[in-house]
Length: 200
Image (tube, rainbow, N blue to C red; front, side):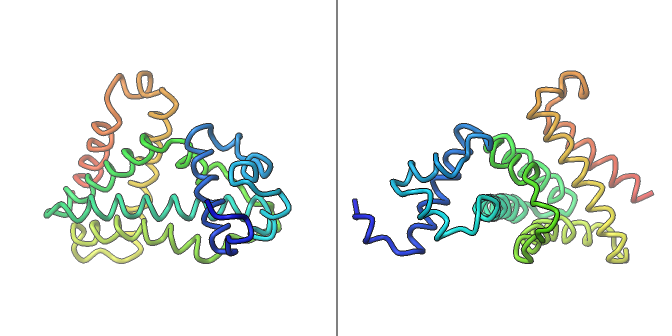
């Protein structure tokens, strides 16, 4: 293993982000502290703050990596389908699968809140828009002639619904809310019925 003095700033940042993601994966967001992270990579807390502005900055970067991974999974799922409606179903399924496989990291994206005086970095919003764009692209092919605003609204409704299914599933509440139906079955029903309504 390299000595501390042999790690560049970029290497320290990569090590810290990988360790932070691992802590969140294993123990949840509440376990992620500067002290635990510094211990995990063999550095002091002070050194961490030479790489990150603060803990919020580090969490945002962990979340950015999570959004990148989620995008890759959803893009791959969308790339394997041929019909637009099946692509919407595939995107919903990939979203559910990622949340189920990485529940703590997925929750951290939505549960972390910046202080009121701190603005969200532009590149963070761009990552969310890129994921959202996958759904809008599939819906545009289905809603022939629909305005961009109408496509965006349809994507917003579907995403909100699938997201709610994910939350209920991770909280083990589907047995009550969904009558024992699986998250995938509920999402497919949501997609099919909503798109059928739009077609009418």
